[in-house]
Length: 246
Length: 246
Image (cartoon, rainbow over all chains, first blue to last red; front, side):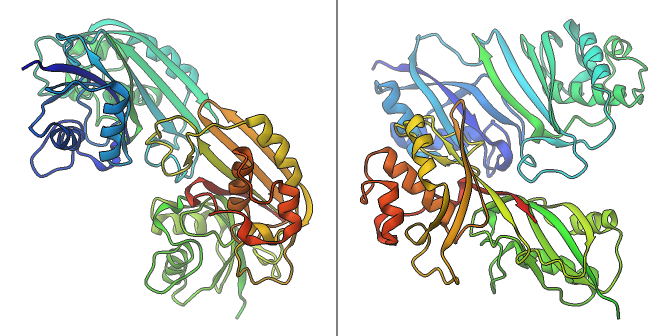
């Protein structure tokens, strides 16, 4: 039997999900998607995502691969999936992929966005998509501090303590800061990010901004490889996986 | 006993509410607000809103007035209310008002916004705040058609059949159309709007855009005063009360 390999681009509002990864008894993006795929395929289907987003994290351009026995036209597959998925998970694009394409192992780079809402009173329209941060913020300092995180570093100090990966060395190629009224947006581009890395970088940048960084400076923090020097990661709701490059 | 009159500005995501107006056994904005006011005041408090938004309609600048026996500092009142209100209802501003101020009767004008999301696949981030309208749209025609609705007219053809008001004559002073990628935004400014009027104007403009207006033209439609000539109002989720003028 020929088996076809597919690649889809997903957008989702992560508010109501326990992240990407399938978990018994909890709503997850992978769980919901695989239920729909099983319904279409008549058998269980395993899917792989470029980034295993955590509880409450959103995606505007998550990439997922899976295999189906049937040959589907991309548009027909997209429509069949969207017809069965809930409104907060949408397939933006579906297409047949090369036999060897793997959404996780083949990634070359990722872009994440972190949004802060800085007015004193939180907007109910941003409550799901931004962290309410009504405290004093020195945007020029945020921009200059962010440059310290650029380049290739061991990011042990900025991930979870139990991050089990071969190497904690990653390259951050770009960080941009944009201000649009009360909305402050940070863009992070890199070859890949460790678990909680973007949210912990945001937390560290804001601690530095308030002059409260235990390590004194971000470069000392990076060099320390000590995860206990930064507080909790910034809340999940502000984070969105925007784009994956292959 | 002196009684103080207060004026607050409210923002709310109307998705989870049966509109502004108090209803027995249903969550409404007025119901939730009055529960909080009663808790602060230790007695029932009646509130009046500038616009009685319908089920699912949002507000970024609703104005509400109510009386309290106690004198409150505006900032303290705002914080006390926000501390007790759910995240999807926020008091942006609170202040003591003149003794005679009435949020509904004193309005001089209102601005509403209606949002359409025009990509083929709906974005999960706009699902609560825009109508998914993936069909062909002639924006130039939308702009020119909208001018027909400007000015003072009897809007009977563009409200609900059982709209019980003294007069159905209203003045629309401005309609603007803005396009930003897949998001198409219509702004409506007027001295006041009848129930469902903005959403029915949107429905009529889009019927005209598809060449499907039963009345042939918007001016014939207005002149007909016949509510049966336009289909259902555009969905509530796309509508937001932006601003109220006094």
